[in-house]
Amino acid sequence: MGKLTGKDLITTIDWEKDDLIKLLELAEDMQKNRYHKKYTEVLKYKTFMMFFYNPSVRTRQSFETAATELGGHAQFLEPKSMRLKTAKTAGETVEDAANVMSRYGAGLGIRILEDQISAYGEGEKLLREYAHYSSIPVMSMAHDKFHPMQGLADIMGLRKHLGKKLEGKTFTLVWGKGALARSWSSIQEALVLYSRFGMNVRIASPEGYDLDPEVIDYTKSQCEKNGKKFLITHDQKEAYEGSNIIYSRNWMTPNAYANGSLDKQGEIEKSLKYNDWICDMEKMKLTDDAVFVHPMPVDRGNEVTDEVASGKRSIIYDIAENRLHVQKAAMMMTMV
Image: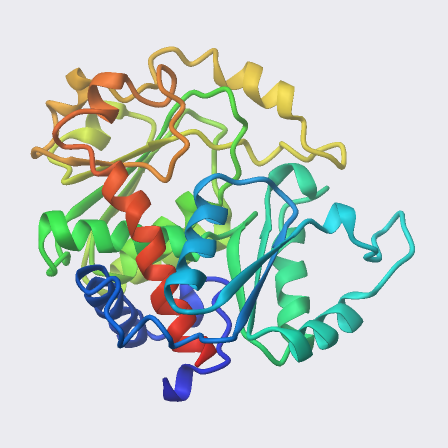
């Protein structure tokens, strides 16, 4: 695929917008021509390595399916069952593992989330280290800072339901109470990507749920560059009113790692006290007939009601399907 062969995809910030659009257009064509022979052998005999520090449902399913439909193979690997060097154990260094895997495979995906790190940023640091030593493309399958495949799947879904011209649409990211103590990966990817596509951005949360200041600054700069509005508020009515896209999801506080590990139970207990922070039909009625977006798994009854999550304006299943198509496109563009 030319200039993108071998390119990493750790966050969409690392890619030019024109290349992201090409990826989306390719993904849309792959969806229409899912089993066409022009795609079914592009990764013939090639292997995509997958490091799962954290378990998954859609990520493993969609990447394995993607490799198969492109004529290749995805190899599932759990670092906990491998002899890799960590802060507490002896084993193979990142440099050695990356160099050897580059001799075996055509690409490497890594998934490392909140409970497998001791401080925010460690997951991204690990991916960048693998990318430094690898001669094959490294892709994030979700890490503590960003989730590029999810963000691209979101945009593909919005292009289908709101039209390919997303500039000027109003995107609201609203915090929801939850029982999962979730990382910032999917929501921060949404912020940086939606703002690059020319949308107005609103963030609503209770006080104390601030996100990465660098991500906020980047998002704000993209809104300014595109002449769009950026808002952070603690007022749900202000956030929902007139919005075109509602993305209601739980996320942890900046103090989640204060003691050198994730205080999961403390985060959950704190979160569940905010009973009014749930996306429901009453709040959705304030919007401009907004679509409901979520990366899944949905914490129904906390982040959002069943009525909204399963309602006629919910596009969560389309977006889940899109993970397959954008990943196929990314693999073809970087591994061929």
